[in-house]
Image 1 (cartoon, rainbow, N blue to C red):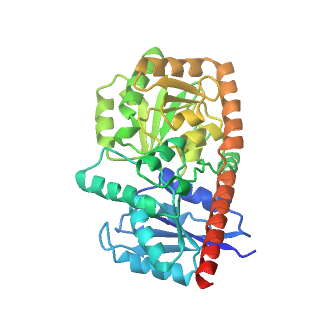
Image 2: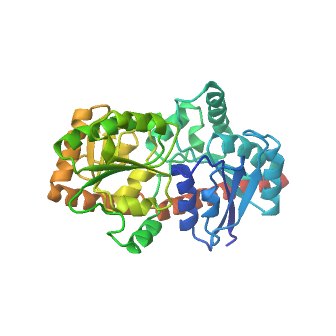
Image 3: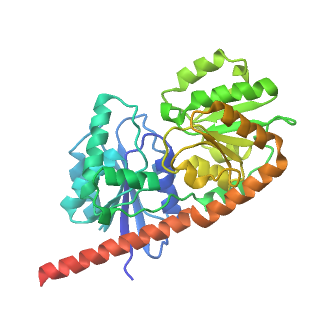
Length: 384
């Protein structure tokens, strides 16, 4: 059987869920059946390109697409050259910018194209909002669109993507990477001293993550137990605002902003509780990682999160914006070891059975095979 040659395409904005998803797919493909190259846009000297630097060489090659500014349409020609040189069969794009450029390049090169939407941020400036809107408009012209959650699948219908082209492939977490990393750690390396408990969050510091609610909830928990600590791993434009808020809180000195960290899984392993207060998510990778790593989770009950967390079974859910309920859920988990153990066991079982990257990669391979089979049939009819 001929190997399928896939080219993942992303314009990295950091090292977040989409970038980690790209690595998870590459780490879990069947290398006998598929070659999976990566192309990333290179737009500035200080751009975070960790997704390219950490890409597994066993999966495929990495290519850099230099951009003259943030949106360079001349990059389309350079992308077509990569497609032809590497004899790519399918382009798989991630994000509005790669969707726009990738669609045109794939059509020009005469190959199949698939988009994987990872979610859309609404609290952005007018110019960026216009580009995102254009990105949603072009989705209907892809050969297939593979949203990661049922909520995103609903968005695709709203964006008028033809139903026949929507293929819901549930998000998956790289269990191989998590298990190998955690097994290599000294469990005491990142633990806080003594009986000090640590609440944690990993992700972008942006408005839709709802971190002011997390700080308010922690401040109330701290009033009950002043040995409690909060670690926030990640960065983003809201960080100065959040740090300023901490300075006015009684618990401010117990909050650590650790910024971007390459050792996020090591830090995660030392959390006693992972808390997510987002208003909008697909199926959040950081939450899946916590559940896979054996860390109990508390989160607001929003679409996407509710696909992962069943209240009092795989985690605890509070109504969105209800800080009283959020605090109550955190207290229960922190103070009830029997509950923690049950949540952790059930959560890992759910990730293993439904949300593994290996299962996700297999479904993508099936989609690519189907698209290429259809293309061959169409090409044969044209020749006849």
